[in-house]
Length: 193
Image 1 (tube, one colour):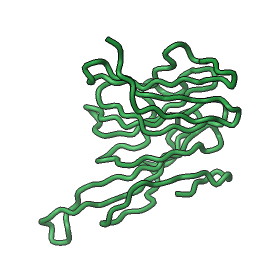
Image 2 (tube, rainbow, N blue to C red):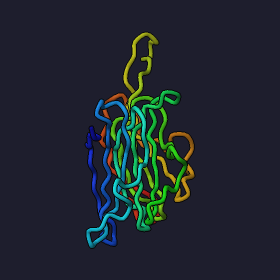
Image 3 (cartoon, one colour):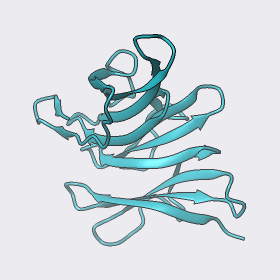
């Protein structure tokens, strides 16, 4: 029996190429993999019959993709890693279908409960990732828990280097719900969240 295909995402780049990314799970639904395919403007699959396998394993969940600005793409996914906990990973594929960063991707966020993820290219073949998260904190009396909501941003360079410390720049932290960040480049090396 074949794989189950779900969570498809598509985008076009400035050259008119189409990038199609999807999750594939085996028939028992417990081993997932993320695949990416580039379709030329003439309708030809550029990266083989099954595309490029970007990530695989239990707990991977495709989230977003963006153009790298150089004919390739960058994918972002959530991974419930058995050793690291909940992480958000990124991977860049160049125009030729080559994986550019480390095998398991680059970690953009590691911590509790990443919720919503947004991405944008940084204009230099890298990516900026915004993550909303939740964590439990004690109140001022030390005996009950409340939820702290945060929005964080992390930048990954074209060579896969993490550019901002830790989980990145804290955009906001509050005891009231914050979610669904949106992010765009300012075309000057920064982003608007």
